[in-house]
Amino acid sequence: MYRLLLVDDEPIIVEGLHDLFRGSDELQLEIYCAFNAREALAIAGKMRIDVVLTDIAMPEMNGIELQKEMNRLWPRCKVVFLTGYNDFDYIRSSLRQGAIDYVLKTEEDETIVAAIAKTLDLIEREWQYEQMLDKARGSLVKAMPMLRKEYLSELLRGEAASELSRRASFAELGVPLDAAAPVLFVAGRVDSWRDDLIVGDKALFLFSVNNIVEDFFGPAFRLVYVPLTPDRLLWIMQPKPEAFPADGAQAEEIRRFLLGTMESAQGACRDYLKLPMSFVVGGSLISWEELPDKYDRVSVLFARGLGLGQQMLLTDEHMLDLQRSEDRGKVNRIHLLGQYLENKEHDKFNDLYADIMASVHGAPNMQTGIALEVFFSLAAIFVSYLNRSQLMSEMQGKIQINQLTSIQEHASWRDVTDYFQKLADLLFSRTADENEQVTDDVVRKLNAYIEANLHKDVSLTQLSEVAFLAPAYLSRLYKMKTGVSITDYITTLRIQIAKRLLTESQLQIREVGAAIGYDTPSYFSRFFRRETDMTPQEYRDAVKKS
Image (cartoon, rainbow, N blue to C red):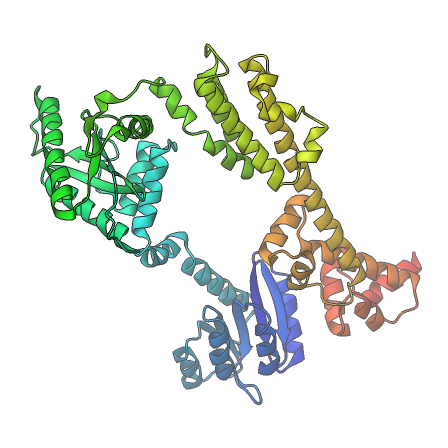
């Protein structure tokens, strides 16, 4: 919903324009009125204004001067001039100052509405999604390496990504790899840091290690560098077609080249940087979907194999087959369950949870291996969520809390699966109920405020301050819950109260209008007639006769 500010030193014109736009069904506007430029600036000083429809010739400060001040306060604000001067030079001067359009006071109502509609359309186009993204891209240049690292780290953790989404992300982040082609990897570890390093030197040395690897492998491979931890590095690679002919010997040739070249790169790190490095080389091409499992098993190999000494150079043949690749990949995504719980994504949670628990079902021993890993990972996710949400005490009356932290309390993996599923369902259900209750409370609070303050300011801006919500969000929330807009509710309530006061009291027409927020009798009469097809006096007389 956009905000329109009407400005003219003639009250009858402002009131007429207010009625005109209030009755315009095609425009969703929040309307404010000012009777001189100073009043207009006072309103603009309190809230964002999107469009100003203003007279040009006004005392003290004219419309062109007002426009300059409005653009200083709100650079995106658009100004349409309303003038009684059919003078080309005067209008041309206003357009040179940046006005969007002008209309003559003698124009038909439809022309005035069309001018504002055209201005709103211009605002909408300026805020188009793609334009906003283009501007954002310019400010993200410096952050690109970090964003690239974060995205590739997500892929390594097993985040689901289709070939199409990978291709789009690679293009966005400048990843020089084919989203559909298989990949190789090389993982590295700094075995020990030099004693003479000072703060900041480690990052510089890691950068130098990457430069060495790129110098050795760049002619034959496309590659991207992923710094994982202060002493762990990873390169994801794809062979260039011109470097390795596609024949039966291609796989062995690539493997041989990788090992030989990595040995040279390792020596360069030792000789030139005085930095002992160990590496694991993935000697066979794998799909992007297989990469998370390979990376996970490399991490194990770093801990078990490379921990035996320094400057080791191994291939992925040394990897321990701790778990089937497909199941391991599912388990690696267990952290996503916490995100789905936080974001209230019930269906996504259920789908991934079913996959993870099925991958463990049938394990020979629930007390060892992957079953324990999954159980305590789930326990950590739920305990953290319950504590942060202050729901631990509440859940104690609905589930056996001791079963949350002890796998011995469960007779089988099926019991474990059912237990955590029940807990998740309880939490999702409670969140849905809580959201519904909060929405109900907001609507009740607003309705009570409107009824008590109908004679005062009940604009969307004021109501948003009462509800502590942004105006646009409040408007959508109210209509979603009640089926009617806040504006329509206020209009209906005003008419109901006005009718009751007209028939059950001796108040004068102007007093009835003031009671529902209309200080000007003519303004109230036009409003009442628009809604009932009768003036207030005609309605009062008709009721008395019936």
